[in-house]
Image (cartoon, rainbow, N blue to C red):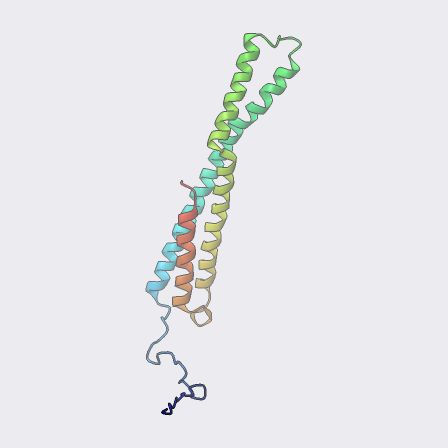
Length: 166
């Protein structure tokens, strides 16, 4: 029988060199080009905020136009049921109109659309204010340009993708 020798290399004691950043790489400085892009994003956020506000106001009006009659018609018809018999044409037309208003309101879901548009009005306005706040600081006190631009780009793209149709 021959003897077999196994050599085990002990790598635990060897040190790996620490990872260093590229010493030749410089941080992206805050220049006019970056500030112009952020100002363009800020302006677009303000425009979208205003458009969502307008859309929210319009859907709120539609919600009221179709919601209030669907509530009031049955109440009024119930109150005048002693004067107008329940089997009359007027009663039937009134209840049909109430049902139609209610169906339109439920189908188009104006209440939810109003809420979503108001929500995105605030989100776009908030992002616009964040950009304005950062640009108002002296350059030496700002977040690193590349980091901030990436952060704002992701927030902006996310809001644009998630926002309801205008």
